[in-house]
Image (cartoon, rainbow, N blue to C red; front, top):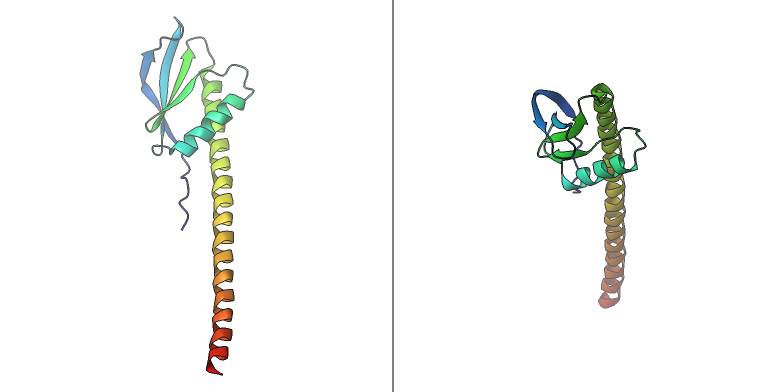
Length: 134
């Protein structure tokens, strides 16, 4: 059986935890809680989606355990920032599901090929048994 990478969803925005961030004098970090701790593959896809995004005011985002840490400034449009992150999570889950399907298909093909080989071996065994009876 093939191990599938789990999708991760946003559970809630942590409205209490806001921390000063070192990147800029006016930078702060806040968190979005996820449905679980993402696997490495999910994180890699998330980071790829973030890097390839053309979002005008994208800020630093990182996965910390079962949360996303977003860096923002007081004067940023935080609502747009959160909407951007929700879209990133959605795109990441879509890509994860596509990868899961691709891996499953490869597994089925390999399993089918092995089964075909076993069938062919069995046919040869039958022929050999017939020959040995003569």
